[in-house]
Image (cartoon, rainbow, N blue to C red; front, side, top):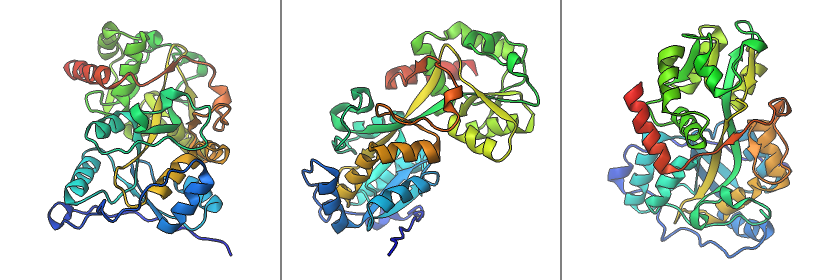
Length: 348
């Protein structure tokens, strides 16, 4: 009989801080010392559940369905939550007696902070041989099964392909003054991360930032999604920071968009899983993370989320073969990110 896995969204527990009804590490399962996914599965079946917090869990429903088809009997409960709300929930659960979630699934800039707070448990995914060590956090505090590509998207009804900038210098010096959309660079998020990575790699410098602000005169929007929507409608011609997955979903709905990665630098954002220390279902959590690095997991991520797997020979998302071989920009680390964010707050 086919197993059906229920996906639910957890309501924000506003009374958590005062009720003391959070999960407790005293009642949590013990993580087994497994060396294979089969061993983890045996322990995970007794737990029967995984709870995941992150900003894009609704998008991962199809991926989690693929996991459940391979490992039936484990319910995956998700909560789309990020930023200050996620910070408050994790802090509240810890104070109340222990984390109710098992995993956080989020960018590395956030996992760095959670590791500094002592929230994360060390874990190296089983059967992830060949994974580059750059995709593993210090002491195994997180691991990165996929990356999301952020570059530029343009409206094909407004611009022709030969009018689209293909380098960072062209973007700042283009004839697109007032026609470039970007999310606010002053607020922590992917836009300042992209700029921080470009600065760290030498693709741009502070003079470029000044020129971009004064000459390109970008239109500032509250979020990356708002900026891209302005390009979809033709209000702007090009979106400076557009996620490849979001772009593909817009194209599937008929949006007149094309995607371009700058030759001298496109940002590949690490999307990490981290096991919460003392979570109630440690073996099920470790099984899910390990599966993400399997052939099936890497294929599922590419197919459903349009993200780029980190394992050697991981399949590319649909259409990604047309992007070309631009320089890959990586997250530059917390210190450089913070200093870039401070600088951007003085410019915009």
